[in-house]
Amino acid sequence: MNKTSLIDELKKECEVCQDCELGKTRTNIVFSSGDENTAKAILIGEAPGANEDLTGTPFVGKAGKFLDKLLEEVGISREKDLYIINTVKCRPPKNRVPAKAEKDACRNFLIRQIEIINPKLLIFCGNTALKSFVSNKGSFSSVRGNLLEVILNEKAYKGIAIYHPSYLMQYATKEQIEMTKDDLSQIKSIIEE
Image (cartoon, rainbow, N blue to C red; front, top):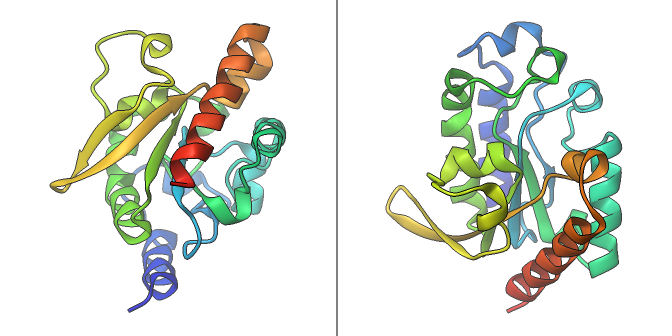
């Protein structure tokens, strides 16, 4: 089976999932965006927000627009280079951080998406995404920008953590925004290898 067929099959499974409480309150599952056949990296966010829940597409609100701007500045194509997912497929109430049980309920979908896409790089967008895959003993800022090794089902993937665009919009210094652009430039180099 080709990647598109496998992804379509997995999405159908996800659409009927009721493995956690979030399934009862969603408008839409937020499965992914990007082209599974051309994506060289998977960007993993925290969770869908209100706009994402309405559209079924990740990173389409204010944070998504800011992310698009940063990607464009460094020459990464959101549509061709990235496959974008979140740690959970359904919006947590009031945009709270997803609970461990909710992330655990979605983990199988995430792992299967990663295995099908088989990216050169996993991009952990924010601390929630990072902690979902890497047991981080230090602060997020001490890990971001460094290449990590992530083992999923006995396969090693390269990973890197970047600041979440919501954080950058609300709290970041100019220095952190510049660091994120540097991280994205490093990501561009890796996916073009």
